[in-house]
Image 1 (cartoon, rainbow, N blue to C red):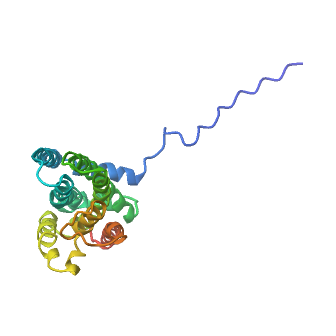
Image 2 (image 1 turned 180 degrees about the horizontal axis):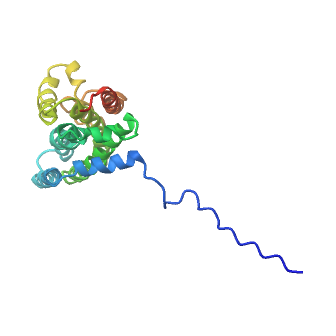
Image 3 (image 1 turned 60 degrees about the vertical axis):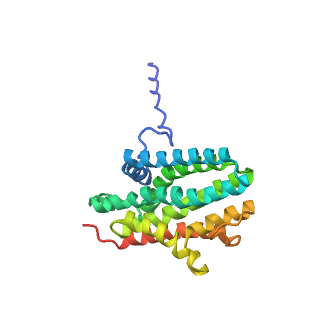
Length: 260
């Protein structure tokens, strides 16, 4: 009588959730693609130089020691950081996130991917935020500290910069997709509308993102600032709503756009 042959051991099933063999998320793939397209050396070098200049000037202001240190630091962050650094950095990168693909007619390759249009918007805005936020947050916070600001100003600068970048990125992502020469139109908005027109009336001021950021600094420090009279909670809610509105507009235009 022969003994039964042993049953060969069965191999365990492959573990679920392991990284091997998993297909990358389409959203993350688009995010990495747009990140590479935006992160060019000239753009990065320009913003790094601007940030470094901001810190150097902040240190020079502190060395001068003229007048109230808190007032000087608050005015410096408001008049330089929120006039130049935050909006220009947001414009340079976010207007190119989808705008460059329109100009060189490569948007069709994103269009043909099996991915929802809102995910394209998410990838575009996220790639811009990942670049712009640290590029402006670090020099602004460091500059606020070096210029003589207190803890209230430093915290308010960090928070206002964060919501400001989100608002500008949302608006300029939509602008880059919608119009040609988005960089020019964005600069006109930043320096003409926010710089001059917004000061003409309260209604015009409420259409300027800069006014909400300045109002946050004024509320935190007690320093009176031009265009800094908007009350809480709108100083915080409006920039967030503006960024979300920009995302909604981008998604809508992606759905309606005819790609060659």
